[in-house]
Image 1: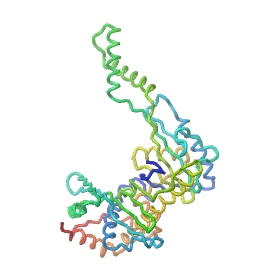
Image 2: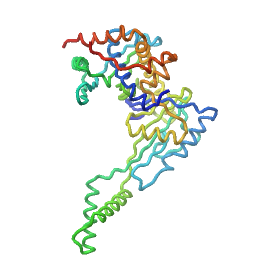
Image 3: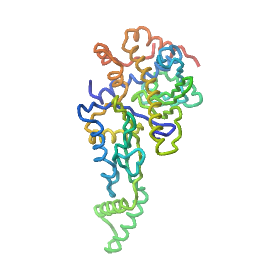
Length: 204
Length: 177
């Protein structure tokens, strides 16, 4: 479910002010240094990095192509390899049989079995391609608001970590308390009342 | 500001109360939901409500779906101490319509549908579509923020304990299927 899909999911953040450093430069450098291409590793079970909105599978950020009006638009791509357990089991069984025949023994020790399994997983990892998942980011840089178009916990955690690593800007997730505290224009006494609030019981 | 993780867990009840207040307001005080710039706006409950009840030993989750959802089940659950954790909403103006499911705990959105944008027919029209979509997404979110602000204003006022909360309690308890 992406930005231009009819329906989407959405998690909101406020982005910390970058101070005097030009934000476009910070974002450009962060995207380039942490693009999915710079992190690709054929053996890794999972890799993640930034990608471009229009070309998520051939990311490039030159000419500030991630700037659309007052927005920065790009994607987080998470490429994940999933090896079916049955496939691992099959190859471990075949490899164990081969080893037993080669050594003339009728058993395989637990340690040998572990090494065989590691070897099988590594070999299969090289042969099985990673499946990419693409999550769009819409960042209204003038207001310091950011929309991450999913609410999946693993993706949002990955996003928050990579965002700070890339741009060194703090993201504040907007949930009931932070929206009330940051966006409702409360005075200090009102903030005190909010902080002391406790759940209301709807029973008589 | 207090630590983010602490604030999330300590005050997630605000989100649950917001959704109950929102349903109450749709039925009893719809004027507080309408932003000044959207006089023609109507807010209605969509086709999905999720309730959770932790009053018993374990957390019981009740999902009510339908077109429209069967609100009787939801009301009975509220009477038994459940809280609303997700609610489907439809925002309608003279020209446009937004649909969404709003999660109370995180104020995040799923199934968020904006009015349609012009189809992308060339590379040049992508930017136009992105900006139009961003505008429409933000427009719907501004309405939700306006409604949440109205809730917070009532929630931190003295009228909450003396007027609003008892009125919601009466509304819930007075329901008979």
